[in-house]
Length: 413
Image (cartoon, rainbow, N blue to C red):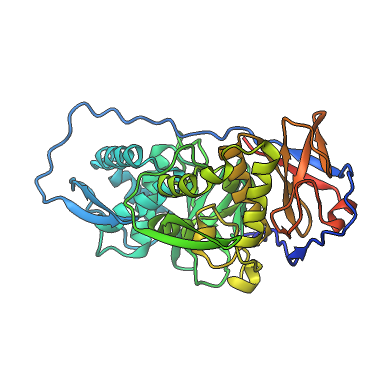
């Protein structure tokens, strides 16, 4: 088992721009341009012509605040006496003769109804398993969950640390802060060992032929889950703005594996937050030219959101989704870059890239008008620097230290 890849730390303290600073137009250095290909979606469709009758009362549980009802089917009342490979193989053999396709069919229906991405779907499978087997041990639930996910088509393996079974999950993007195991077909990250010291890991050789898709942490559409509305009031230029977000979504994000920054910047904003952003910000942007609109959003994020590093606020590094900036009292540079990039793309309609430095994250915007200022050149197109953490800095002004370092340019799809 290999040590986790640490979450990239961005400790650069908030910097204030002084209006008497010399305004220049510098071409910033580029280390690399990172274009992320579209990630693969699971495409398994379970065709069950007739729904099998269940003679037991349905099961009820709550998932992300959403009441769920599922049917109970026969054949799942199997177990194992120990966790050696023969016992686990026999257990999965018994499950393969059970009514598991109906369990999967219900799970997939719920996924489609709720617009769940792969990680949220995995969390749903975990809670469905808890509802089915409230009296089962953690090891039995883990073995069942890995069986179900593998049958659906996900690349997931069963592992053992001491006397505890764990899930080994392959992802389509790099995951930070998790122990992992490297196999010939890639890295598998360890889940289920939380709170336990790192120990030697044993991996079972059991595999599924149709398990060929790694979990996709991206979302293509906002999730449909029950609303527990919370609001956040922000002050900007002596005016109050009120934004809404779904606390149930924040609960999901708290379980989310830390991954590449583009995933956060491209994640669809929930409908409740999108509507409140539109209500509060769109009137401020109407009748403004591109630069004026971007300048408003830039200064809004620079000054309306209190700044603290993740270490100061949480004690650990954590990338935020856009809604999380409304939930947590403070945010840092990469979080502000995520929200700013989303607002400019949605409300002004301009392309934005992230500029990733050793200790800082900024953004650059591709204007249709000619704009002066510091810029990066991407495929012969100018992207003007807009830094949401450089307090008071206008469009086109980069922090001085970033002019000496080449940035990784993260292209957003």
